[in-house]
Structure formats: C-alpha cells, structure tokens
Length: 264
Ligand code: KIV
Image (cartoon, rainbow, N blue to C red; front, side, top):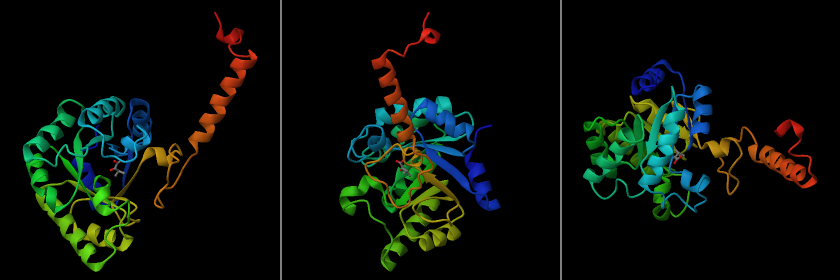
C-alpha cells in the first residue's frame, strides 16, 4: 500500500523517523522503494547531479514531469513527491496550481514540494484547496542561490532564526503536510520540530527532525563536484563503475570479450 500523508503524521506522532531520498529515474526509484523508504523526492537537484548544470535554476517543468513519470513507475509503495522547479510557481497563483496539478495528473506523483516561506503561503493554500498535498521547504532554498549569495547555512542570527520559526508556522497554517528544513542549526530545527504538528524532514538540519532526506547521488558517491558537510557517503559507486567500465574496455581491446559464452 502507498505511503500517504496520514502515515507521515502518524510517524511523527509515534516518534518514528520518516525516511526519504531523491531519485530521478525508474531503476533508482525501484531500489529506493524496495529498500523500504517512505518517500522519494524527484528533486530539481537533478539539474546538478543528472544534467550537469551549475545550479537548479534552468530546470524546466517539462523535464520534471519527464523524470517524475519514470520514478512513479518504479515506486510501488513510497510516496512520490515532485519538486516545483524555479519559475513554475513564482509568477502567479494560477500558474502555480496548474503546474503542481501536472505532477499529480500527468506524472503520477502523490504530492509536490516547493521552496519558500511566507512569500509562497498563498500558493500553498491554493494548491491544498485543489487537493494537492504540499511539502514546503525553508532554510537554505537552492532556487534563491543568487539572493543568498551562495549555498550557506541559514538561521544563524536570532532574527533569522525567529523568521524561520514564523515561516514554518505559516507553512503549516497554509496547509503544508510536511516541511523540509535545509542547512539550519540543529537546535533551531529541534525548536521548529517541537512547535509544529506537521513533520519536519531535515537535510543538514541535525538529528531532531522527524525525518531525513539526502540526494541519492551524494549517498551513493556518484556526484563529486562538491560534497556539503551534511552529506554522508554510504557507498562509492563511481569507483565500482570505473572499475567495471575499465575492465570492459580492456577485454574488448584484447579480444577476451565477447567469449563463446556471450556469443551465438
Ligand atoms: O532538489 C532537491 O533534491 C531538494 C532536496 C535536497 C531537499 O530540494
């Protein structure tokens, strides 16, 4: 049975952690699903780890739909969450709702995620009214990279922390079913998690969040351009892949592949 927004809430209330990773295609989604994670985020991080872009800003709505369709086919149980790319929800409420609806109607997602606090409250409210479950995302919001002057830890001053607590509450009041907290101090994430009824999912926000999310290419050691402090590499698949590709090349060059076993 599919994981639902009710399961998210139940886990928070029972003190059980919510598990989430990104995925961008069918085979990866299938692995994450079979490993028993609660949710798969089709993040616009795919711009950096799949498309090789400098940041997430050029990713388009059509590209997100394309990837979310593949992920949905591989996710039998995990909730699939489509990430609203830059300029798919900023211009108007109507455009925001239509684009969010595409994730549900065309791509088979069960929820969407969008970045921002009070400035997107009207979008979150309108999407919720249109029966689209919304995961909000505050703290370090990569689509605001130019305004923030880089990918920096947020909420470090008393004033910034207070604003983030307010934003978290506004997101809850606007109808968000959960909230991503990215790159903020652990104690601030602890306070927000305690003050909200909806679950928080941390990425670089410490252990007190109700759940955790990471980018799968970071977890598996497939993205080496930079590794944030909050990433733990659980494997180094680049090394394994390079070994396999190198062996294939050698065997083709020396004629040992294909052998009789692999020929008709
Ligand atoms: O785009 C993404 O993958 C994200 C997560 C890192 C939270 O927003």
